[in-house]
Length: 141
Image (tube, rainbow, N blue to C red):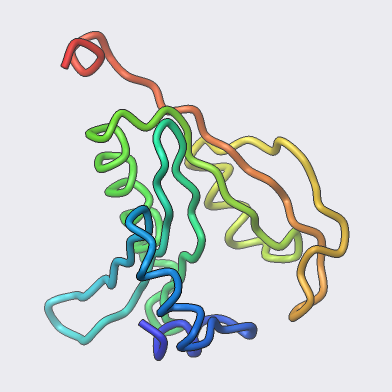
């Protein structure tokens, strides 16, 4: 996980960061592996129903623009709904146009801004949230 993190983020989490997060029962890490390659993506999140916070979402540079991040978000929604999570939220650097476009496409909405939140690279954090919709069949379960 740390290798993927360091390849995808300029401000990677340290080994200590990951150790501390792994000790939390609400924390999860996913690595995305495709049949023809090794691990190409990652997703880290913390779920405390009725909310789930996306902490890290990344795809290796050579594998971007192939729908893999969207796939991970869709899978996360399936898991979240099975745990009766009502909303997903995250913070994203406002300068990360590819990520913000993906989140907006997936139905996330801006709920606020944290000025100068990110240091490397410098930028404001957009607070994004998605309210999960349940059909009647899902709500009855």
